[in-house]
Image (cartoon, rainbow, N blue to C red):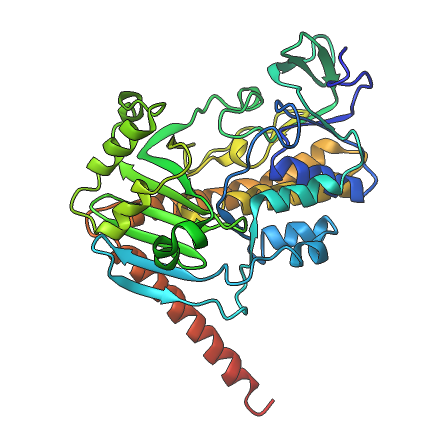
Length: 401
């Protein structure tokens, strides 16, 4: 047994040290329940966490942080101005420019800062780095599950939670479903020190979320807390398109990507031309909208392992965290009956995920279509109308009270 895996048998094993796995470990810790988190990365700093900000919703990410006892610390990490939204068309006409007055219900935080907050709130040794699971199976001849790691180590655990993302090693224990390609791929890149080096692009993107859409493609961007512009250039294409581009050759990849944005405004194409980082291709995959599984003794899933969906509902991190909080609270409520806890958790998980996955699938079609950004503008207009109606309702109710 290696030191990365640890010699003590954990009663609860969480595979994956993303936001969901860490939130679960923290909620359990708050309730005096020990768990071990196993992650394939060699350390917390082994891989960047991406530059896009996360907007934490009141009924999801924020509620999870309250359950974890970390809400006040989170408030100190909130990025001012992060709820600004700009929507442009392919000609760079600004069609919506919503400023952040600081009163929104979805404050934004840097993903890396949020992960560091969760990691710092766990006892030393909770996360076992360099522990890549290669196989998970029911324990032979008894309850629990057996995990095999890349170094040959094998452990048996009483309760197993798969928080290990899109290509989960734990999911096959409960489901035969595999993620399918959504028809959308994107290329991720950064413009470094944007205020000083790329002032025109900084002004174009603004301080919050940025969308420039049209013709089944577009740019999604955000200014990160490190001062860089983080950009995703997305397009509807065949699943194999990424394999036809030599992304190791930055200049060639840039030219190939620019070819897909011929006829777009120069200031939008400039985002690609000014890319300082490598261009990193990513395909967007999703599990079936109503993905669920029969109650399987001693194991469950959360986050992308349970309900991978496109990012176009803006719910991925929020769902992972509220999944984790609900699971942790269920286990704390039924300390002597984990099966009852898992059943209660999944009864909430499945319908919630189905609703959000449907919204994500619809969101993808709203962002990437021939009439974009019309659909996205209509969606925000509906949000505006709903907020106005809610405000009117509160005002009317308060009259004479």
